[in-house]
Image (tube, each protein chain N blue to C red):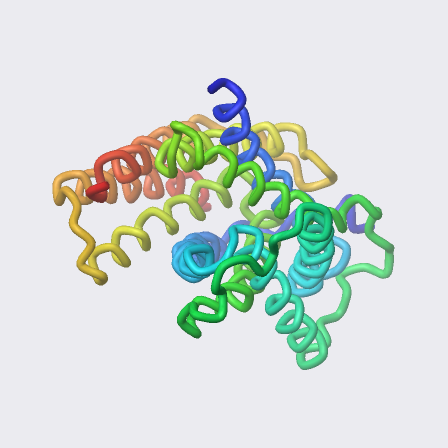
Length: 157
Length: 142
């Protein structure tokens, strides 16, 4: 049964994939940020959702990837897109305050890290549970410190 | 002010929540299907907000350079990668590697575009992040 099977052992390719995905965020900040300069912030979120949906359909038709299990996922598992849409609204409200972009990003990273640690420790929403070790905390501390240096001192305002 | 701080933190919590839900969906389907549902459900939600709030097409969005419209395809790849990684290395390590990749690529893009910035901060920031990845990776090599 799928819930009982242990997740595949972590490999270098998984870390590389996640790291590369971070690079994609920078590209999206560039594309969507530029779009927001010409249109509204809502538009800069609506367009990528629309073109992304079209491409995702094309990929599904071309690759026809098989479902991992015949078992249906719970309905709430389909709500990731709502959470993503709410992110845009929360971010735009915060960055138009005294926090500006740098403060919003820094606090957002903090929220993301706290959530991920909690989610791992609890195995939240049916994902594999894994207790974060001291190396996870050490790594997070170093990466957060580096991120804060870059956010607040890296680029001239 | 406290409300904006709460909103900024909430935006991070929502990013984590979204990745967790998409990861759960990929566990029963696959990473590409998870990315598809994330986009089509998100499209419906943002469209709904636009219908209520209005002003979706305000401004001159058609004047934007063509490449500014490529965020969608990049996002499809991003969501699929996140849904794939979170079930293999966990939420915390996925988050920290995505943050690391975002920060380091941001420095490279700034550098390539000639955006001025403090060299010491860029070198120190990247060094700290690389050290963080190195520390975390030590535990995973079996």
